[in-house]
Length: 138
Image 1 (cartoon, helix red, strand yellow):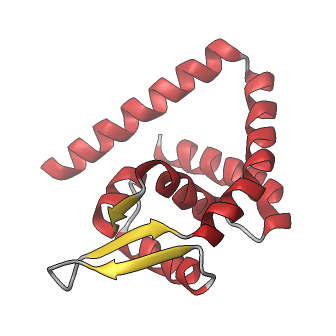
Image 2 (image 1 turned 60 degrees about the vertical axis):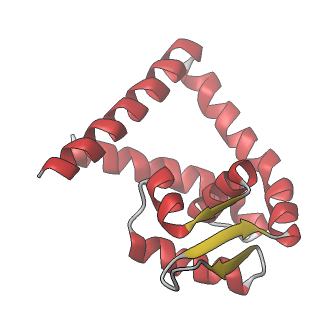
C-alpha cells in the first residue's frame, strides 16, 4: 500500500509541479500558501499537522518561502514556537499560480470522473487520519 501511494504521489506531484513551474513554485510550497490563505496565521507545528508533513521538510521549505518574502514568521511567547502568516507577496504568488493549479486539477478530475474523484478524496483523507492515529499508537 505504501509503495503504491508513494508512486501515485510522485506522479501527481510531477503533474502539479509542471503546471507550477512557470511561477517558480513547487507543489509543497503552493500547498503551504493555500493553507495560509485559509487559516490566516498558524504555528509551524499546527501547519505540519494540517499537512501531515515532517518538521525537517517543513522547516527547509519554509526557509525558502521566508527568503522569497512569501511567508512572514514571528516567535511566540515560547521562543521555540514560530507563528506563520502569508505576506502580500505570498498572497499575490498564490493568486498568480492558482489558475494553473486548478487547470491541472480539473484535468485530473475530468479524466477520472466525478464519482471516482469524490471517492478518492474521501478515501485519502480517511487513510491519512488512520495512518496518523496508528502512528501515534506505535
